[in-house]
Image 1 (spheres, rainbow, N blue to C red):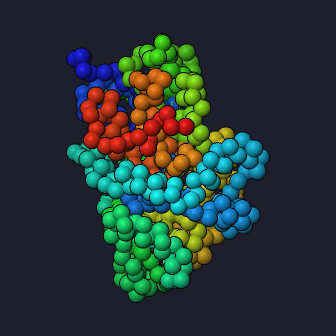
Image 2 (cartoon, helix red, strand yellow; image 1 turned 90 degrees about the horizontal axis):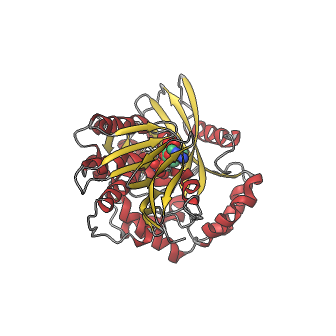
Length: 416
Ligand SMILES: Cc1cc2nc3c(=O)[nH]c(=O)nc-3n(C[C@H](O)[C@H](O)[C@H](O)COP(=O)(O)OP(=O)(O)OC[C@H]3O[C@@H](n4cnc5c(N)ncnc54)[C@H](O)[C@@H]3O)c2cc1C
């Protein structure tokens, strides 16, 4: 190793960790990628596969505080709470709901825009000359509404996207059917954002990226990290639950919704929660969508993925440990069948995963002040597939000592 080369341990092999590992490897470092279950075992496996460059309006829009209680009580709304978890999540929830105002929303939008706007290009750069390239498709992203009056309720948010430079095309029913015959008669009005994209199989995509990393000399270790080994204000390595140790000069925590368990060992109390999300995947469906669709009435995404139709969404507040609930699956199923009564398929697969969620809807990207050789790359909420590659690239640049011409203050890991 040259003096500039570092031994880097990346904890968590989801979209963020794999991206960081690849960019670190390209910068010449000796990288070990660690996951307790294997590559793409967390949220990065089961998401909706949408490169939602335009998905930068946070959940915390003004008025949420009044809408949320009603949504929780209505079984047809995509927000669920495991009531036994309420006392645990309350401090986080209060901080989260406090952001549901115009000033904070605008701040979040501009900082998410900074990460997400060029995501399709970032994915292309990450996957360049690897077998993962074939999974990336630049596509429009369709938001389907019942009718124009329904759209009008959200128009102010689409206007914010327009102000940020997104091209949004309004579509009447005949234009929707012309754009994608599979959507004929499904929506009375739609908005098509043209700068987004899709990953045709998120799990297979991240595996292909990780294989390329391995083939180029990167190490992948299956094991659960229990803590960082600290000496003064630096980490010298990591310890696994079985007691084994791995020395490292630099450590990246990209463990998704589980990251705060590791940062606790650094003496930090980062308010990270999980927004549990669900998918149903219809295998060999008789419906193939041209581009990803957001069904705005149910707030779930639909995306055709190589012989499967994946429908994913729902926010359930209920922590990391509880088993999946039945009600979110049933709601998704009812909504999909109501929109596509003609849907036929061979089997349906169910999945639940954990979005890593901060109260201010922004990820943590950068070094921790109290241990400057430990780096955060987590907290991407609903947009970690989209924003993972740029996050990984930024981390690799900072770890390599490059000066970034970007202001990353808003993502500071020390802001809480
Ligand atoms: C239903 C649903 C739909 C979504 N749709 C989209 C979408 O369309 N577009 C989009 O951009 N985003 C979407 N998201 C969000 C996106 O999936 C996440 O933000 C993203 O996957 C987070 O990636 P990550 O790498 O941070 O975490 P993860 O993918 O969760 O990876 C974390 C990894 O860390 C490992 N790990 C944890 N603790 C340890 C430990 N102690 N030791 C070793 N390993 C550990 C885990 O096993 C896991 O593999 C969706 C999420 C859900 C749930």
